[in-house]
Length: 442
Image (cartoon, helix red, strand yellow):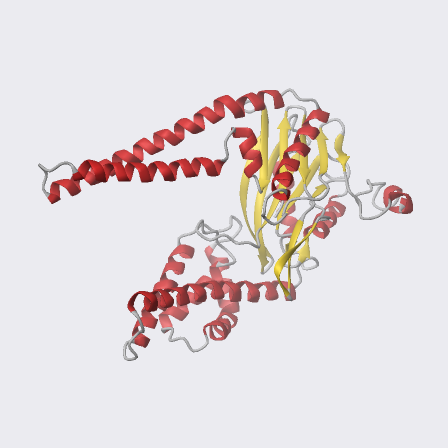
């Protein structure tokens, strides 16, 4: 995990990112955190555009740092009129790039992704079996296969409905999905046999598992969170943009040369916005700073009020002796609907108060901050998240040096703080040589 932030006003955009990276180790069940990852880079050597990365540090095994620096080399001195065009060109660079994403990496990622998702489904099947055994005792031997088939199909149907009703990646259509299914069907069937082994899966269940495996690489269900997703934030100024803008992408994988991605945040400073504070990844402490109250606290208020009103409704009904049971049930249903409206109004009121009393005053100041103050604020907000992680029992998934950069129309991409894994005085060829005397970030 990580903590990153972009702060924009009419003059500049400040970007800040921590350096912690969490990795799994094959012989140890606890993740390892290294406080030295690079997550913030200039996207162009000569134009005022930067990029941040969060989430998965690689795309199907290729490090994002390598991808970004190869794109920067390809871009050279070229530029685009808008940040949106930079984003489109970056996605185009990822597409059909066999140098960065060779066939063996794409196939290996496909197999591991499908195997992992089938494992996820298998765990759900076993949990349902354990629940039946716990509640009803041992399953009769003569009913075992029927019950097992019903559970398997129930889980498969649920996941099938989730995936088939989800939106596609914007660059992928039905024709491409059919191509994936046709090319990798034998691989999917083999993975079904390997993962589900001797479970009694009906043929229609196997067909739906093949469909699910296909859609893993083309669609984005809201109900499923893919821990392997990478977040990309591109921010700065296009050639024809006087004020900065920002676009974020969620990118999961590359299959058959096509990236599976979706657009996230798009924010443009201009007529409707003078300033913005936009956190990414672990954003809880930054949201608390901006809103004066933790978002989880609002969720807890909502949960508590729901319980209070539910109990109050029961209390009211229990004292209405003149109503019969049918009338009481009808009244409970009406009161429950009223309760939902009351809670919704309460939460909306709290959110409006947060916006007016906390967020808007801060944004008003951000709108007039000079470049150095933008950088200081960005660094402080990332440090706030790091501090929270350090002094709680949670794993320190935010930490290490904080890299900070400011991008402005006149000065371009300027490092305010930047860690190095090497000594600059011993590597002048990096500082003064290489690709056009670029900065020591390499």
